[in-house]
Image: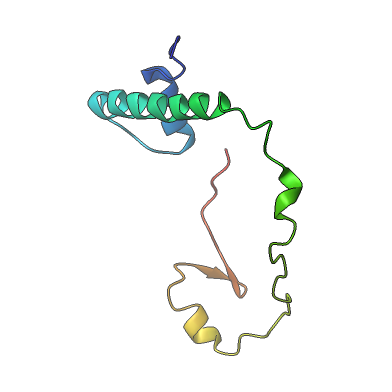
Length: 97
C-alpha cells in the first residue's frame, strides 16, 4: 500500500465510538490488522471483472420463506434473560449520546 489509511488515532477514535478501550500495544496491532484488511480490498479492486456476466446467475433460487407473524406464548421463557423490564417492554441502556 502506498499510504497508511489507519493509524493509532483512528483506532482510538473507532474504539471510543464503540465504547471500547485498548492499550497502546493493542491499538498498534489493530491498526496493522485494519491496514491488512484494507490492503485486501485494494487488491480486490484491481481485479478485472469486465468479462463477468452478472445476469448469468438469474436462475439461482431466490424464493424466501413467507414472513408470517406468530404469537409467542411462553412470555416467561422469552423474558428469562432480560435484565430490566418496564411496562412489559425490554429496557436497554442508552447508547447514543
